[in-house]
Image (tube, rainbow, N blue to C red):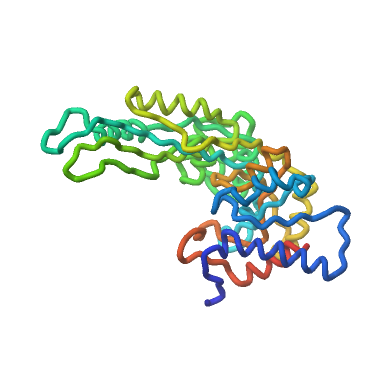
Length: 335
């Protein structure tokens, strides 16, 4: 409609998956003989768990998963800023997904006989303390490369601050200002934990026997999960509150920038968008890349769909991509 494809998954990430299939079919039809094998894996990724995804393939079909590197289309690509393509972002690292439950328990009783110790109140006090928690700001190779490149596209004092944190020893005051400039930048520069679910009580006329909050944390790649456990317990500061991990995290090391691949990306995009800089970045979200990186395989996350950084509707009812962006992605992926 009006030059757009609308539908769940158009941006995340069916459009780019179609690009991979189309490129391989075109190469086959043209009689292309690659020097090695191309292995295509179409999986649900983090959207539907790992039961039949990359983690399963690594465990049950390892012979298919031996490669020099992997390209994951679940992110990255040509960024549109100010109405025109500005750079191609390539994810080389991502944060670690780790959820916790924070639980208060109580014997309960009849609501007509309230007691001073109420599970909901106890949990609420713990949540109030956690609301002020901020993890330290710091950078890594991916975020330094990202902000160093973004500084060239950002005017004024914010651009100066981004330049100041691209160094191996970033300016701490500049770090704080960049983190405060947007939720995205804040997530790039620190581990975050936020409550996402609440449950408690079992009847309106009964004192609650249990109240529970779920916290979803996104750890910087080099963050120690045991250290996060300790910080949360210290901030909660209540021995009667139970803190438990929902599942064990899957840490994965960042992938080193592959200069040859980045050059090929720039060359493939030049006929479509002009010569754009290709820059690494760290994803605050989660993809199947964590399993491959943990297995020792470098992973680079990008696709060829130009996207407006100010109009990301992934997972929304009005998710969309431009028709011409989709067409360009087919040509880019083939190249």
